[in-house]
Length: 279
Image (cartoon, rainbow, N blue to C red; front, side):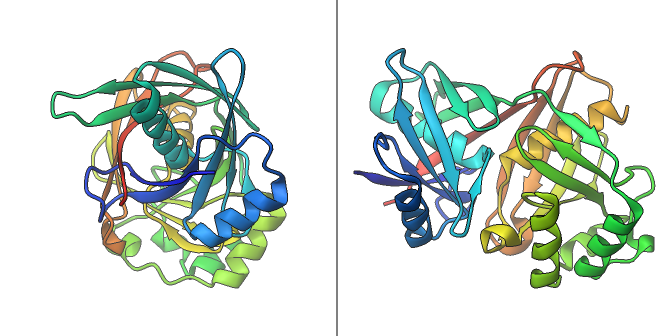
């Protein structure tokens, strides 16, 4: 078994979000996958098993738990697969549903991947849940941007979307990890999408991930897709639109995610990024 290590959403190995990738995971049991993910220590490790039709079955494990869908590990897996088998179209069968991915080679030789999420959904967040969430974050209601109301968004996994009124609030991340992790575990939220809108289509984002044993995720493709679905469903953008998401900056691992939001309200959200292999 070959455990590959890639950084997704960056061309710099010191940026982006590291992911473990196993392209030959057929026959590996769940307990072994979890143990490998814990040993690798990244926010996620992806385990892919080829199907006879060329598609891949894929599962994602954090150091502490399995998640139904992970965007940065999907990008890393697609680029790793392209490096071994060539660029093109690939279908991934995730726990959340089928996720098509397309890879291509840029003029500089780097490989870029675009995934299309499952159909997104947006739901209300209850008053008690919001109060508990803000308390765990050590935020107040005055810290919120009223133009982007709190919701829970889904594009393969559930993520509360909490918009900061100012960039300074987003930069100051100091939350109660045990309290937030307990709330997220009860509600089956994977990460919290803390966002600051710079322009109509440019966002700065941070993603606490305590259920996975990770203080902060430097690039979160699943949450980026959920954010795109949230903005479309709430009428906060005029689709089709392309969003630019800056993540990881405040933790010293800058990442760049490009999110395509089609006009069709039932269509999946496109998330594009590069990935580079770590030595």
